[in-house]
Length: 281
Picture 1 (cartoon, rainbow, N blue to C red):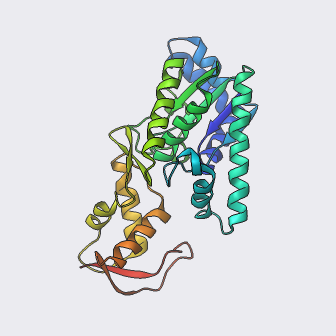
Picture 2 (cartoon, helix red, strand yellow):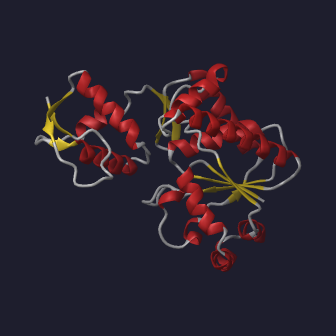
Picture 3 (cartoon, rainbow, N blue to C red):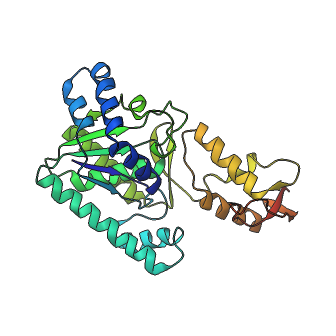
């Protein structure tokens, strides 16, 4: 059994779930009453032989095949302080995908954990495009959209509370997700967003109006604006990265859509954004 997810934070939470026998025992007990077939219960309680995280952040940047590697490394550079490290991570993730496909071809079952967050939906569509020509034994475990936590990394409480949507993927379902990915690749936009459960291509300025809506009349710390945008985006079932919002704010300032009212002294070392007070124009 190989478990697959699409971010380092998701992987950390799933690692705790999958490596704790007590949790697996609780899942076994809960799923006995929760699922109509014993097959899903057996799949969910099976030991994990390997946990694979593919943090390619496919919701950001261009994704066309011709420059896929170059653009992925550019995106990963925003997460790592050196391009060489970003390149190594890209090579590692690419190798992980190849290993997953090889395992599927050898009939190793897969559990794929995902959510409505754009990075996870893109990851699911992408991995399905790689698996579409295999006879992969895949169980899909989506995080419930209606839950306020939104992603596996943010889940609270016991893991079995979130497993009721787990199901065996059909070849038709895998083919559908693969086609969705191929369409997104043809559109090759700079951003992909979740609109009412549908993954759509968008321009990098897609969230600009939403950011401006959350700017108060009084001067506002950049960190507070970023936090407000991140929190309210979850209410729309959209998951935005703080670094992306920071870049968009700086672009809005440069274009005269908001102004700098001053600077502030950060109260926390966690505030690593520019220490700007922002105000409506």
